[in-house]
Length: 186
Image (cartoon, rainbow, N blue to C red):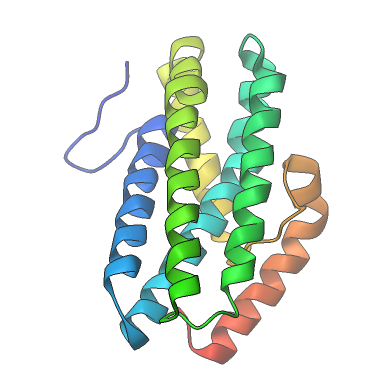
């Protein structure tokens, strides 16, 4: 079984679980903040969610679908949840971050994303940890990190799964990263 070291996560399960914790913290931070701080926090949240989900869709979900018993149906459920989350996240992009509507929808999204993350950790990640060797889990972590460096930084509902990301992802990523540079986001 892989464990964390002083240098951080050492495999894909640790890495993605740590990101789930950061995502939860960013939801809380965004909900507590107001004005410009809330907007900046929401941008960080949106970006982390987008790259995280893309990497899972490209690297982790296909492996889980192949390796785990009933993996295909498990991954279909996760992809449906991810599409719903991307849709809701996209809808929030044009909303006033200080409005009650934004706050209400962000709370709903948080609850859905946390539930989704718990399913991944309990079913998919635990299954991968039991079926794959430590070296395979480490290789998956490297692949996820690489995928995240070129992933879109905004949600793109309807672009779920490895194939869709392979065709649409590079163009979406280029457009997102150009837009982020114009708007001054890192």
